[in-house]
Image 1 (tube, helix red, strand yellow):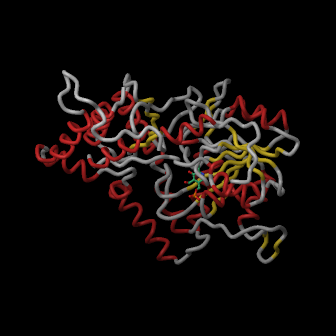
Image 2 (tube, protein in one colour):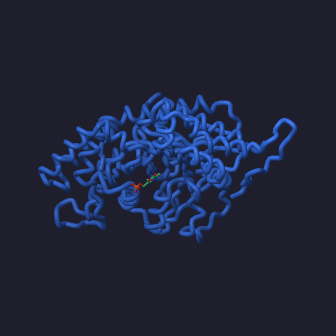
Image 3 (tube, protein in one colour):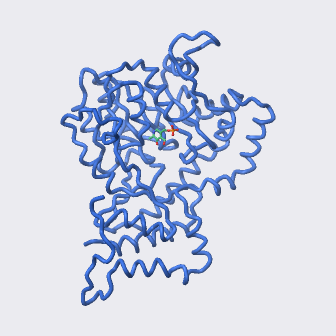
Length: 422
Ligand SMILES: Cc1ncc(COP(=O)(O)O)c(C=O)c1O
């Protein structure tokens, strides 16, 4: 990893008799001796996502919902699946929600329903969770990787048109870390070139985009098709796997439903190639409960982000997440860019202080072995390559206490300042 700083690298100066990293090590090692019990409790309870505490708050509702499914034994396609689908359509203000087994299937079903053919080109960012591009490979389509915006980390609008060829069929923007991609110009480009838009909304459900005329549209409901994941840690997560597909197009709604259900509209009449991808009743029952809390969950995440933003403002080693004016950011992750420190060392010291951190994502899609044969041509992915080396995400979830936020931000600042190379 470039930029590694060995411990004891700093030479003592007349003002600084001990190396900064040595002092930091002492602080971290002996701090627990001077901590009161509540600080020690904070340290041992920090997680990227705290689903246990979240469950504790909705335990009765969830238990009752699960019990109802068990009592009726309608484990597949029980009434809860339809109830959830209808509730989500209403929440998103979209005509059709098609539930399915996970967010990866949702993307695959979307691409199958659009009849994309092997060799068709799909423009998508390389800086995303791998599932976005995995299905492109699975269906033998050709990913055309696009650079991301330096502030939002979402697809860089200015680069899209340069990548369009006669074989391009779709653009797949990803609403990354809870922030919408800049959909208005993306939709305009798609319209001009007659392309489909598939929004990968696995990370930004509950958020919306504001168009220049003031219209606010839920993420995932602007393009031809939107997809999402209900993976447990997502903003709307179930207690296993789950996903859904959204569209406002009636014909596509029918086709998506068929593809997700063995290509059939009527039982045993298989008209097209499909797959078996269902949201099971238990997960739908849980999601029915959690959907009612989604806005409150998104607000809670935004409050944590606000706290961190204020704590880290003005520190020139940290670039806090950018809030685009068009996006109601729902902070699936709190992802910063750091500079002037070794990120590996920073993560190690945070871990010693009981603070988990993650790299989303350590290897961009275009550098994955699976896509080693893809000819990138003139595509410039310098920023993508830079981001994977310099981003860091810290805990953000619906149950964070002020004490936890205070502890994390104070420790983060102490550690990053002590490790700073210049
Ligand atoms: C951007 C993105 N796309 C797709 C997926 C795939 O979702 P799932 O894990 O439910 O298959 C994820 C999940 O992590 C994701 O973050």
